[in-house]
Length: 94
Image 1 (cartoon, rainbow, N blue to C red):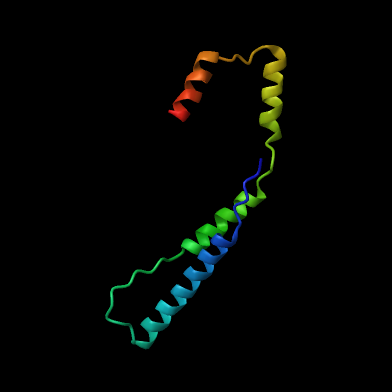
Image 2 (cartoon, rainbow, N blue to C red):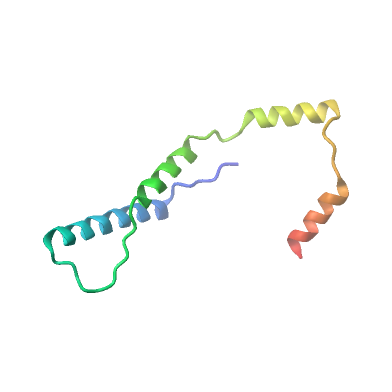
């Protein structure tokens, strides 16, 4: 299963942060900064873009994990604990 992380929300956030940064920089340079309180987010858009890029580069299936699990099941080393499984299911719905 692959989670689609690159959606319009992430790109809109990135664009909005960039435009806010440019506006704040222009106001500071021109000396026309308003007297209002203002918060500016910096470098977050770069972080979001970087994380989205890394997520999109990751493989859809981690084949090494699948192979290890398959081998453990086939060799009988993979043990299920039905009580723990049932308890976890009930905990999620309680």
